[in-house]
Amino acid sequence: MKEIKTLLSSKKNVVITMHKNPDCDALGSSLGLAHILSSIGHSVKVIPPNNYPNFLNWLPGQEYVTVYEDNVLECKDIIKNSDVIFCLDFNNLKRLGDMQFVVSKSKAFKILIDHHQDPFDFCDFMFSFPDKSSTCEIIYDFAAKLNLLDNINSNSANCLYAGMVTDTGGFAYSCVTSETLRVASFFINRGADVTKINQSLNDYSYNRLKLLGYSIFNKTQYLENLKTSIISLTVKELSDFNFQKGDTEGIVNYGLSIKGCVLAAFFIEKENMIKISFRSQGDFNVNVFARKYFNGGGHVNAAGGMSKDTLDNTINYFKELLLNYSKDLNE
Image (cartoon, rainbow, N blue to C red; front, side, top):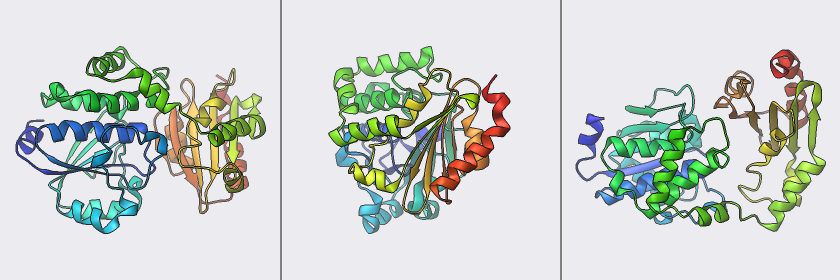
């Protein structure tokens, strides 16, 4: 960390980026870090590859944000002139979409801060801890190493606590440790408003609530002999409920909540691909499963993937694969 302390000891043009389709951990860690670095004199820009859900617009620090897909030329110029690029909550450049080529070509010093497994080697410095609950929790560790914990104010604390809440399922997942709760407590002591955060993250639109009900009542299958739930939504179904970015977030967890369920899969039909979310209980490793069969990855109990096949073919392929894992799912 001595190299990073030296690097950040004088004013720098800093870019903070995150994976495409940012969730609360990605955006919260980025804005939280932006507040911290700005407090010590750095010029900071947060550049998500594309837009994030409206229900994250309340996170303090929106003034730092310039969305790449909406401002390509401006963002290219910002990245070109940056001294330092922080890559948060992803460990493969492909997760940046089209923006990956701009970041890859940049001569800026690149720093990875992430908690996903099996990181690719594309940064100059890696601060990667797959055993941590969230990237937001790791930002605490990063700030501690730089002696910047006193620079965490209510704005950064709200961002970082929010990311921890969402990536731990309200501190309910197996990734939660006593250290996780201690860090969350620190953020509360620094000004995180727990009530406001929970209200903001659970402020569903009427259409989102109807989509959730439809997904559970009409589109959930449970393969009892394989302890696996499957939920799927087509492009038309999403359109019928006036789908907005973020409306499907968390739906996969309802499948996993079925008593006895070990594996949950959620298939979403997009215009040119099938997006897949996996969740599991116990030792069934969806990170390995997603990497092996669906061009994805993530964590032991939470991962994502994709398919270029049709929705029906993708689900049928998934069901065929499950037959090879019957023993693992029934242990």
